[in-house]
Structure formats: structure tokens, C-alpha cells
Amino acid sequence: MNLLTPLARARGHGSAHEGAHHWWMQRVTAVALVLLGAWFAWSVLCLVGADHGAFVAWMARPANSLLLVLLVIAGFYHGWLGVRVVVEDYVHASAARMATLAICAGIAWLAAAGAVLAILRTGMGGA
Image (tube, rainbow, N blue to C red; front, side, top):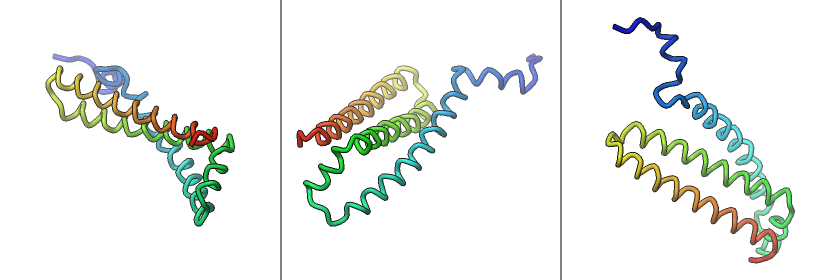
């Protein structure tokens, strides 16, 4: 017989004790993606019809490179958070869940690192 009230059980944030942090990170990255996505869409519209050199010049501006890197990092992290929830909810075997989470995390972070590297190389004139 459990004598804890529902509120007392909920205060622990679930069995892993990180539910509130995960929820907040999803919201923070979602807001960041809305703002950065709107900036990126506006920037792309301003570059319609521009040649490759104009795009590289645009990307060489430190503010644009920084915002692109932030967009990529927020996007991959937000995506990883979503994949993590799906895997934790639907993969029930502990070993399979851990392996799937490790593989998905590796793919997400390698892809994010590659995108950031591409942005920095292009912004620094290495394209």
C-alpha cells in the first residue's frame, strides 16, 4: 500500500529524475528554432537570385555564421530530444534501448559536427 499522495509521487520527475529538464529543453530549443528559422527564411529570401559568391560573402559575416551554427545545434539537439522520447517510450528491452539511444546520439552529433564544420569552412572562405 502506497501512502504517498499523487503530488508527492510527481515531485520526483519520474524514475529518471530528469523529466522537467527534458521538457524545458524541448521548449527552449523549439523557441530558438522558431526565431532562428524565421531569421534563416528571411535571409534566404533576401539571397534569392544571388550567385555562389554572394552567398559565401553573406556566410562570411560573423553574425550570419554564428546564427547558422546556433540553428544547426538547436535543430539537431531538438531532434535528438524527440528521438530519445520515442526510443524510451517504445523500445522496452534495456540493452536494445541503450544501444539505440547511443547509435542515434552518435548519428545526431556527428551530423551536427559536420554541418558546423561546413558552415565554418564556408564562412572562412574554405569553400
